[in-house]
Length: 157
Picture 1: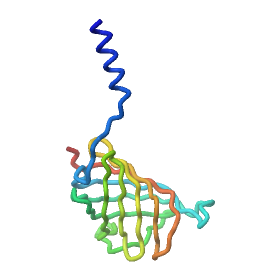
Picture 2: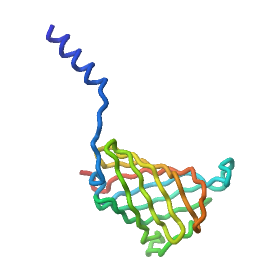
Picture 3: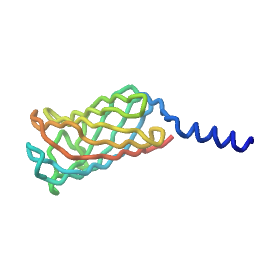
Picture 4: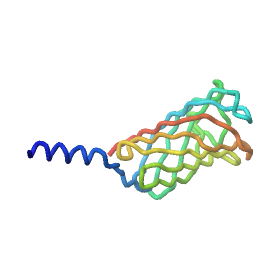
């Protein structure tokens, strides 16, 4: 009878949703990331270019971030802000908001008129982030992108 009760308890607990109880504080420190996807025509029906990139972002645990990246479209470097000695665009800033269920939004300003909004999901207790671009502008005008990024903590807790 005890085995049945323990098994029944486990089955009941397994059916309950598990909430992670995340906050902005779960993202703190340095992360590397990769970017992959494509730019799309204004109506979204045609790919206009392949996009790949790598970068480094620092989260402060309070909803602010700084970033540098190197991104190419069809093999040609995408223009951006100031470059460091390695050619990475620096000085990119942003804000983020993390919900209790470990979903959230990351807004990055890449340079004047160039922005990205990512919908994100936190995993591995903040050591990994998965993102997809939900909105973007280039030179102040909306553009369509089908791009995702995966982030990994440099110094996982």
